[in-house]
Length: 243
Ligand SMILES: NC(=O)c1ccc[n+]([C@@H]2O[C@H](COP(=O)([O-])OP(=O)(O)OC[C@H]3O[C@@H](n4cnc5c(N)ncnc54)[C@H](O)[C@@H]3O)[C@@H](O)[C@H]2O)c1
Image: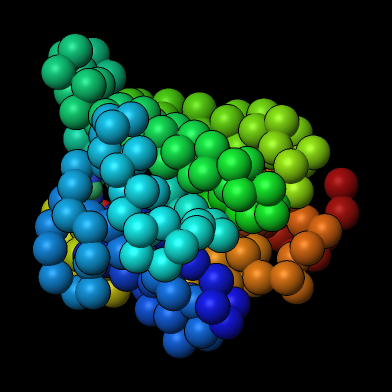
């Protein structure tokens, strides 16, 4: 990744921060973007709008001369029973998680097409695309839409040499998760997973490093599960017997 300019949204903490740190440690010039300052964030903005994403890309070009990749990671989730969801709840979740990610990909792609030198788009999705956890309808819908976006634009952008891939993280230990569970509940949940722990932001960062690097030059339209086995079916029948 040496010298590559990568814009990462949601970089102030959690998975976005993990991705930014792993990319930075491998030579990338990372432009961290978040609505919250700190932790290496260079561009503070709410990425929900097309204008914010346009300005974010312009900032990266001004600072480093080009954009080689964008990572759409910023997201929020307002959970609650389906029958109680109000329009403002949908809007709250969709604003950054769906629309913001769309505009991040679009602004990045426009810049990379103009540069004429290929590039990469990476979407941070979720295993909720495959595991439709209750009480997360708006978040699940947003992530499902992004899975569709990823495959759709992978085809559209391939002629420009721009690869588009998604990472689907499993349950990952981030500050955001502490809004939904206590430290003890998270640790216990991790122990019950096939690989015995929750994901760490750097686990997702390593996957991002691969997908953005030249090692993945022939990989596009890919959905990479990085989930510690959470989506595996571990409720097996008896190991032995006959019927
Ligand atoms: N933690 C998990 O278990 C898990 C699992 C699957 C997928 N994910 C996905 O990984 C990504 C990061 O999740 P996390 O757990 O690290 O979350 P987090 O809440 O810990 O961090 C999210 C970051 O995004 C920023 N952000 C949110 N809305 C923004 C906006 N409108 N504009 C700019 N920045 C904004 C926040 O300020 C924060 O720094 C999200 O896309 C999430 O859906 C997380």
